[in-house]
Image 1 (cartoon, rainbow, N blue to C red):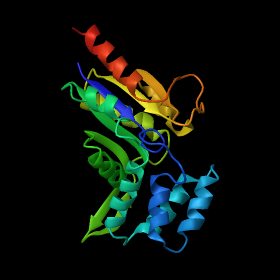
Image 2: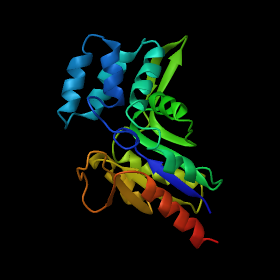
Image 3: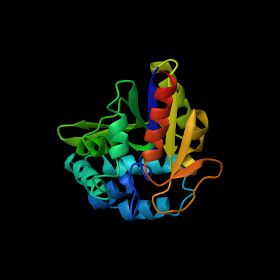
Image 4: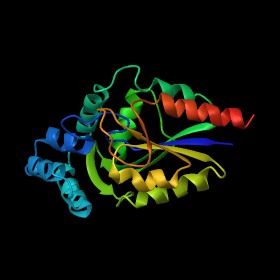
Length: 217
């Protein structure tokens, strides 16, 4: 039996301070319209279709180095021990990591690389590059409802698997409801979603996975 740990990215794998990952990439770009788009996004309730359109327009042609810089800055927000429980449990051959995010796959993958981790499944915007620059974006997660479909994709890849999911906010609720075990990560101590167990680190996920593996012996 396989166990898949399905995680949101922004605010779940790392705490959001001033910017989330895509906002940070926009900020670092220094391009016209970037700060305005960040401000609109941070106010909340922003139409994701409009955001994705403007986001793609602003970052198209941007050097790949900006992706590395943004991921490195996000990586610096966490301590060396924060992700250790995930790393320990993922050493088991039947445990797999998936990331389901409204963000950008290259930012996610670069962050994980810096952490010495790799996701076997990533559902996010697909950032295409050419000659060292961002060429375009292909949409994978276009709405928060798509996160539940991504969990269904996971179940097709690993038939009969148990899905342990963690998110940090309302955009993750469909993913959490589709999982077998669901948690809400609260880096800052604030409860963001009702009806799910709140955790302030990944020890509880490791504990749950170990319990499941024990049940299957």
